[in-house]
Image (cartoon, rainbow, N blue to C red; front, side):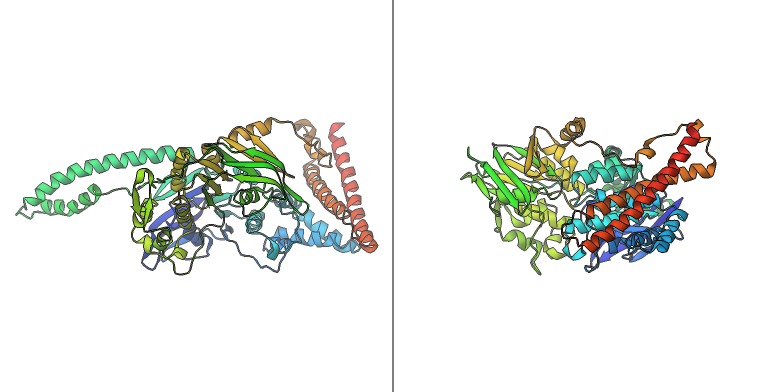
Amino acid sequence: MNYLTVENISKSYGELELFSELSFSIHKDDKIAFVAKNGSGKTSILNILSGADVPDSGQVVMRNGLRISFLSQSPQFNSNLTINDTIFNSDSPQLKIIENYEKALQNPENIEAYQKAFEQMDIHNAWEFELQFKQILSQLKLDNLNQKISTMSGGQIKRLALAQALISNPDLLVLDEPTNHLDLEMIEWLEHYFAKSQFTLFMVTHDRYFLERVCNEIIELDHGKLYTYKGNYSYYLENKEARITQEQVETGKAKQLFKKELEWMRRQPKARTTKSKSRIDDFSDIKKRAHQRRKDHKIQLEINMERLGSKIVEFHNVSKSFEDKVILDGFEYVFKRGERIGIIGKNGTGKSTFLNMLTHSIKPDTGKIIIGDTVKFGYYTQGGINIKPQQKVIDVIKEFGEFIPLAKGRQISAKQLLERFLFDGKKQHDYVEKLSGGEQKRLYLCTVLIQNPNFLILDEPTNDLDIVTLNILEEFLLDFPGCLLVVSHDRYFMDKIVDHLFVFKGDGKVQDFPGNYSDYREYDLSQPSQTPTEKTVTAPSEKKADTNKAQKLSYNEQKEYKNLESKIRALELDKKALEEQFNDTSLTQEKINELSQKLQVIIDDIETKEMRWFELSEKFES
């Protein structure tokens, strides 16, 4: 089933043409990744698909009634609303029903309103949807639903936007870098969720494991043309290489034909027959094919690294806390030459704080951090480049000098250096504020590396970089002779460049693991669970009735039996949420009585439904 067709769209900003005459289609159950270099217009294409922008020419034809959700890189919400208000600020009928049910739970004395809301949940079969909705919020660590948007971090807002997009249950989900600001656990959950779901996806992402495990089609914009690969990332890499090889063969043949036709043209045939005129007309096309050349200039990262002495960095009994939150607790470590360490852990466990302590921008509470005399840090932060108004790209580099020293006593001009970082002559005179997010990150990376560090600290370096730049950065880092410390949620990147990991477990615990990310995940999954699974009323859903038993129930009873399982699970979650509110020591007696009444209504409801569930289960067990 065709959902959407893009027909010959073009987009320009002033003299800059992003793309021209692009056409493709999206069908039901497609999971498409759109791949292109930074500055090629990926975000503009997503904006056009979502209706946030329009093409200069061409059109997007959509199926009638198609529901689209769009996750942008910089989502905007009303700062006065709470998470709960934002989630329910939707035209989804099921969300409206769940919202009414949640409100009814808050007013247990109005039994009539509660019964009506409960019946609506039944009629519209909203129990499963409510359970899924709560699971999504839980997985994305959006637990305080009364938190105001104005108090949330950029990462929390991105996760809220992702939750809203998933919960809206659209026909087509358009995603711009969905894994940015997610920790590794969340990324793996989302990966599994998309791989198993019926969502139709169109996304831009630099996460190559995500591409590998989720996508069934990749569309690449390369030198102004679209190429479609019906497979995952591995299939794309293999077939792209084959395509480029074939293009080179065809270009070679065209060059031979061009030489032959050029000789014929130089003889200037006098007889202008129909045949010769046709041959003259074809000559321009042959010339164009013969002179076709790929502009695959690789970034040449060549720096004059400062000598690194025997003493590098030493942590001695370092501790750090923020109020009740412990970041480090007696941490000890001595860095050695050439170490390549990756840092992983859930958001909020102190990874960036650790980097800031290492670079002395934050002091430890106790202990010492000793930095060797020869250490020169190169610190690539998440904040990115400091954009000055009306500053041009070339001016950013000239702040470090007209000429930059390279290895073996050589030097290079600022202009030449920018060319090596894929900024051509025209781009060098663009204003920095007009660059795409990925181009700004590439320029920032250039400014960090040209300072010739011998200890590189990279905090989420892969965010917003295109796959081409990522591959080149990885090759450079593999050859980098200094020390390397990386915080990244890009599993592919970490697997390729680090030797061992600091795993931030929370509560000040840091595990030194000898291996890369995939090694750690394999080890972690092999360990026995640390906490026993809670016994909840979800147990009935785990009992699988065999076919013969199920047949003893009528169709309506089977349907009721299945719905009861979902309702019991949902009510149990409501019960748990209410019980947690009793932990608040500031509760008044009046509020405690009110919560107790609400809790009793839910407990009674659970007991009633459990009894009915057991009645039905006994029916086919007899």
